[in-house]
Amino acid sequence: MKRLRRRPRSARAAVAALGVLTAGALVFGASACGGRATTHHKPGTSHEQASGGAGRLLAADDGSGHRLRQVDTNGAPAVTVAVRPDSEDGWNVHLSVRNFRFTPDSVGGAALLGRGHARLFLDGRPLARVYGSWYHLPVSLVRSAGGGTGLTARLYADDHTAWAVNATPIQATTSLATASAQPTASGEDRSETPRPDTTLDIVVSHGKVRPAPGRTEIKKGRVIELRVRSDRADTLHVHGYDKEARLPAGKAVTLAFTADRTGLFEVETHESGLLLTQLVVR
Image 1 (cartoon, helix red, strand yellow):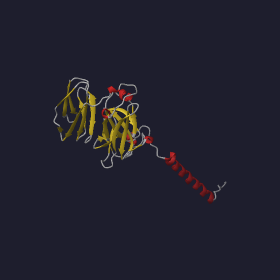
Image 2: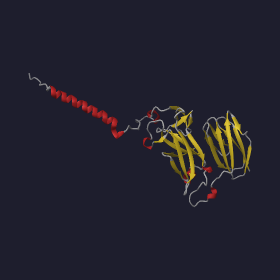
Image 3: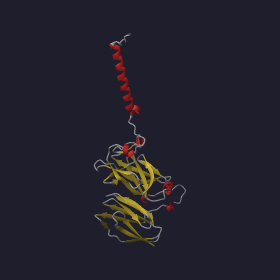
Image 4: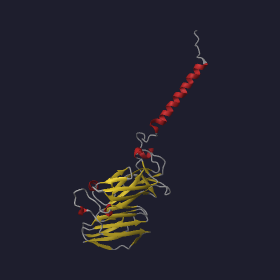
C-alpha cells in the first residue's frame, strides 16, 4: 500500500497564510469599494426601511405624500426663504439654512440628520426640487404650475422624508407678490404684475383671533395680501377663491392673490375652524 507523503511544515504554514490574506482582501474590498459607503437600498425595500436612525418616522405626511421624520427642537435643521426679481425673467430664490447642508450626491440614501435637499411649493402645489442655496424661478414655471404667490421652501432628508419638529414640517414661506419690482418675462406687459393694494395682519393665539373678525371691502381686480401667524399648526383657506397655505406653528405666513370675483368670501383656518375675516369684493 502506497503511503501518502505529508507536506513539510513550512509549506502548510504558507498555504494557511495565503488563505488569511485572501479572506482579508475580500472583506476590505467589500467595505471600501468606491471609497465611501453605498447609499442604495436593497431591491424590494423602501427608502424608509433602508434609512438611517435619525429622528422618528411618523405616520403622518407633509401633505404631498412624504412621511414626516421628527427630530428634537434643539439642533434641528432650519430654513428661511427670500425672493428677489431677476433682471431678465422671474425671480431668484435664496434659501438660508442652519444645521443643514445640501447633499445631492447621496439623494435616495439613508436619512442622516442635517443633510438632504429642499422642495419648493407654490400655494401648496409642488413646484421644484432644490439642491443648493440658490434657485432661479422663471415666470413660465409659475404659470405652468397654475399661478400663485405663496412660495414655500421645505427641507427633506436624502430618503425623501420631510424633516419635522412637533409633527410640523420644517419650512419657510414668502410671497412673490411682495418682491420689489416683481418682473415678468422679457417683452411682456409688466402692468400684469400683482402688487398688494390691501394688507391684513392677523394673529391666532389660544383659539382667539386678533383683530376680531370683521369685513374688509376690496375693489374687484385689486390684490389682497393676508399675513397670518398661528400659535398652532393649521391651514389657511380663502373660500370662493380656493386659496390655501399651510400655517406652521409660530411662523408668519403670507398669502396674496388678485380679487377677481365679486361677492362675500370668508377666510378661515381648516383644522381649528376659526373665522379670520370676511372679504367683500365689489
